[in-house]
Length: 263
Image (cartoon, rainbow, N blue to C red):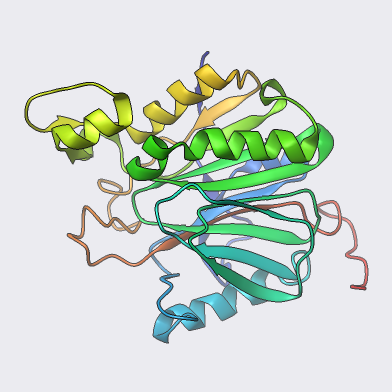
C-alpha cells in the first residue's frame, strides 16, 4: 500500500507555551489533536514523577491543554508491548510503569508517549471515535507492539484493521540508524554480517501491510538525528538527549466550539 509523506507542522497560534508540531489534517478533517513537542522542552520521566526542568515543562503542557484535555496519560516506557485501554481517567496527569501504548474512546483524555529516536505511532478509527498511540523502538517492533496496538484499537472500536488510519511520527531515519546483526535478526528474522541500517518506520509499515491496515497511512519525513537542533535524539546525542512528548486525543468539544463545563 502507498504510504504518503505527511510532515508535522508548527501548532497554531505561534508563540505556544510549549513549542510543538501537529498533524494539521487530523485536526481539520477528524477533530483529532495529534502532535509532538520539540527539543525546546524536555519530558524525561525519572522516578515517580518528573524532576527539575521536566517538571516545569509538564506543568506548561497541562496549562496548554487542560481545557480540552483534563486528563493526560503516559507510561514509563520499557520497550515492551503493554497497551493500556483508558475508559476513565481522573483530572491531572497519570503515569504507569511498563506501558508503551495507550488506547481510548473517551473524549478529554490526551494519550502521550515520550520519544527520542523511537517511533510514535498514531492510530485512529475516526468514524467510531477511537484513538491510540504507541511507543515503538526496535525491541517493541520485534516483540509485537504494532500487532498489539492495532488489535487494541480494533477491539475498542468494534471494527477491523482496515478501518484504522495511521501515522508514523518523528523518529530516527534509516540512514542514521546503524544496528548490529542481532537487531536485524530480531526485527526481520534475517541473518546478516556486520552492521546494517534499519528503517524503523519502514518496518512498521511492513507490519501494517500484513495486518490489513488499508485505510489512510502516512509517515513523517522528519529525522531526529539529522533534524538539526529541532528534536531530541538519543543516538545523535550519544545518550545525552532529553525526551519529546508525542500525543493524541479527542478534545472535550469539537475544535473551535465552546468547551463544556467539566463534570
